[in-house]
Image (cartoon, rainbow, N blue to C red; front, top):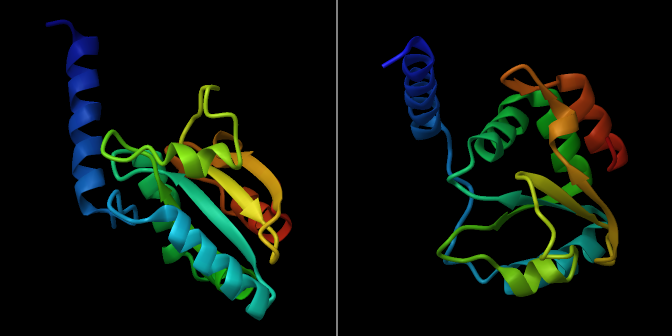
Length: 153
């Protein structure tokens, strides 16, 4: 084996160890449409927008984003005050194609996570890719904060 193979194996091992420690917010067995319908009713009552984080428990960047927001008090406060937060599962067990097709063209390549922002009436405001929020092996607090405050990166 050459050095790059060792580095790649080492990186995969580290990512696997990190993934094992992070919370797994996606539920492949969930009835996503029913969940989102409930959130729309709740959003209307509370006057909040909905942020749907699309991805899966297989996706290290999805898990990192969730953990970053939940463990950064300033970001968690913005989310809790302004949004209802939902993790829309995409995995081999459940691709949720009907749900996704309401918001995106499911035939186009998607990169995970991405976010679907709905207003309090359930109308799509924005679909935001996450790579513009990244910094190094994680996310930029300032970029994520701006995104959460405005619904756009």
